[in-house]
Length: 177
Image 1 (tube, rainbow, N blue to C red):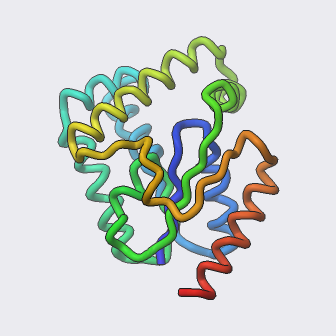
Image 2: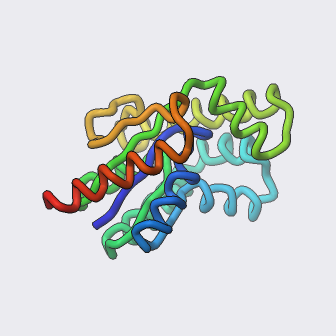
């Protein structure tokens, strides 16, 4: 079984995914970690690397193929904006975390101890780039929630409540499948 956790930057994907990894003892892979590692290897900021990737679609395909290959092995949690779409033909549970833009940007700014305005510019640039790239590469509309079994607004409740709710829902899902 695979569990995907999707959502825009700062929605809580990684935090919740790590709680699930502890609870269910599953392997973990984050698309964002792969992307950040590649940006570092190219000696670019995330914003610069996003622009670079727009002109080099083979980078997205490389990341996406790795995610698909790992998902086929099963028993894992995948964290990333596109992971549910990439693995929709592999049995699993797809979770989408949402939060208002301001909340997400505040979370990132606090986590990285950076100015809000700087994080806002970088985050919105990255998200626009991703929306455009995924539409062009795969004809996927990131704002289409129809493939998700669970959609939760992480801006409304604490991390603890979100994690406990998702854990309970996963256990119910596992009983019925």
